[in-house]
Length: 230
Picture 1 (cartoon, rainbow, N blue to C red):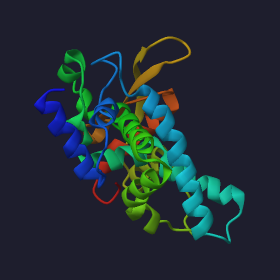
Picture 2 (spheres, one colour):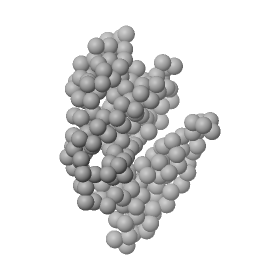
Picture 3 (cartoon, rainbow, N blue to C red):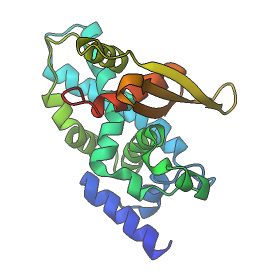
């Protein structure tokens, strides 16, 4: 392990408030498939499950009056790509990732899908390194602002709906979504989508495991660029 990699692992631990016993696990969580065969995809799979369980447990304990359907809806908003992207940005995770040369040149360190997946991989690494209690502690810390901001009276809106309503209220042109690229085999495809608001010269791109997911992420990025909308 190089000194640079050791520093990278330590910095990850500092940012998430956890001391890794295994620096190798921390590095694996930060390693994209473009960099090495031993990458973070398996940890991502594990972290996704741990995240869902911890969030379900927190919501179950906090909101004893809510039925299953409402709990599922709220959990979906806390574990989706948009939420994971927000966490990755707070952690400045992109600057710690190990990416292949091609991904580095194409801005992979800022790509929403890569960043969101890396958050799940980091959580999977914490679980493998320190067990469920350690993972739960990290997840509770990272999600605390979102948990505290839950509005049980609010009607949920997805990013595409919110963007359209913001534009309509200001008599702006409606967003257009264009599929730019589809990569991968049929069972594991990645979609890259462009969101355009013509009369505001606003353009955002995002990737997702489905076209719908990519469109939602692109809409969310557009909202973040609009005053009072993000």
